[in-house]
Length: 305
Image 1 (tube, rainbow, N blue to C red):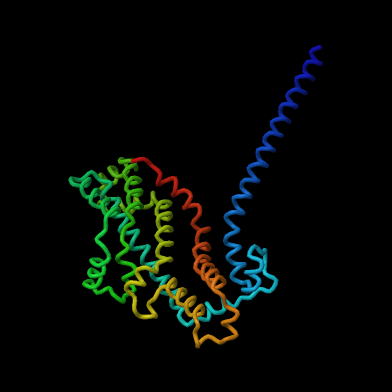
Image 2: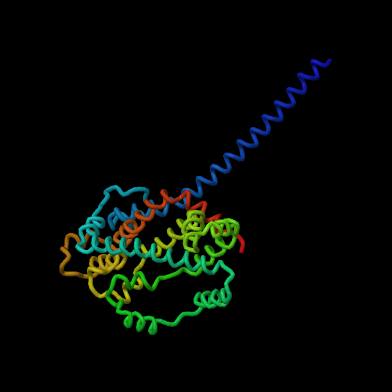
């Protein structure tokens, strides 16, 4: 009887395990389907943008939901990459991104470190900085300031005014405030200065957050066009976004410099989609290398103040 009971118990256990496996398999299938749908929703706009950029005008208007054009036409990309000012615009934008991100990170981290300390007047200074998120001086005073600083028609007019992102500074300040004070105290006892503590303790511990904020700053600088439109006058100093806008305008209007054979093949949607691809791919190529820091930085910056 005991042998029979053992056999029955083993069968019941196996049946329960099979049921659990089936439940897990069903749940896994649901998750895979949901992830697949989400991936499709994320990927399809990029794919559709590329397809429209290489489709002819006739095929685009005839089949707007086409999977791939029957006769791909890369003329939009040829016109973009043969533009005389495009590569110079790339260099200007890369300079703005590299210098601008380093400049913004320096200001953001140093200010966040100072405001994370309990010095007299820290709260008043923090309040004064936070007010600038809601109230600005206006465009005319800003332009007059740039004139007085002699930054009009200078590439640095797209860098120096950007300064600090207040929201990013607050996140970093809260992160610095939540780091163990014992680290700083032990370093100060050993004779380290405030700058040494900041550079060798606080910054290394906040690398994921720095990379995350730097990525956001980089995207902002890469998409810079407003300051360039306001202050840049020379064509060779214009950033990539303005150059691409000029290219689109040049081929969309009735321009006698554009051959008739090319003008017939170029249409507005194709040129717009090609410019989107040109401006988006560089940022997309950088992101995978920073992904592990980016994900960690999002959770690191979520500490409570």
